[in-house]
Length: 375
Image (cartoon, rainbow, N blue to C red):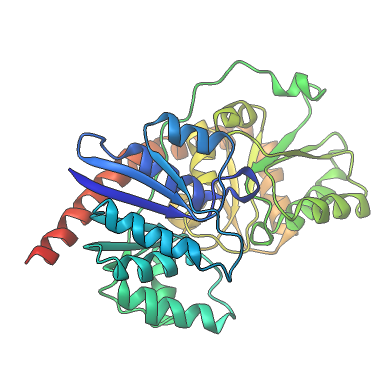
């Protein structure tokens, strides 16, 4: 049996994005008959996802890292890797990639995999340097979640092509709906147009573009409702912008939304929206697809790998609230088109972007990297 360590910063709701969720999903999906599964969070983890990890039989180790200058947690990590005779460290996102690679090598772990879940690749020369010289050289594989991210890792950061590996990701089947009528709960009239999104409220998500699009749509659709589910630092700026643009009554910020309740939220939407400035391969869009909710999204990162414009949804330029509003209005006005695109997207997600397929690819990658080390 192989001992596998997944590594991420935290699984707590105020830090929970696609990368954190995927790290947890992979740890839970690995075959317990073949892997001893440990998930290391470098900071405290609490909330529904941390509870799900424990319930799945994955050992959750919290290093209680208090800040960037804290060194003791890395000594604890090295002791854990050595004492448990870990075969594979699979780190997720920049901080864990750096420390997972460094400490994994010091602990003589046979296989170290780093997994980048995207960033803008703009500015931050130190980050590019560490990705290239530490992670890119020290890890056995440096995974990218989209073809576009792999291109940027190679061309912008200078990671060697043989180390940069594109690995399509996926999601598990959506939980069954609980039967909640979210529109009724929120006092939304049955015939009101409802659009929305589920995401971590971070600058990357460019939610101001969605709010500006809503302000434009409101002129013709005064009963429009925008539901934004998620937590994060952008909550107050989004609320303030909605107030400034006169759409505070239309835009409803729902706070952290438990993953098991996402299907109930998506069932309340006429159109799901992703307005991001940059993306890797967003789990949120995969969930919109799986739920059969029509999608309008910005054509950034790996999103065009998920959504073919006019076939599975509509794509618009990033930062363009006018184009975003036009795409949303098109699907609100043409429900036949919306249904056709949603059906195609649902079939595509099930066929190409499942969690089972992702874990199968990882099994093969781990086996190949271990075999190389043994040779």
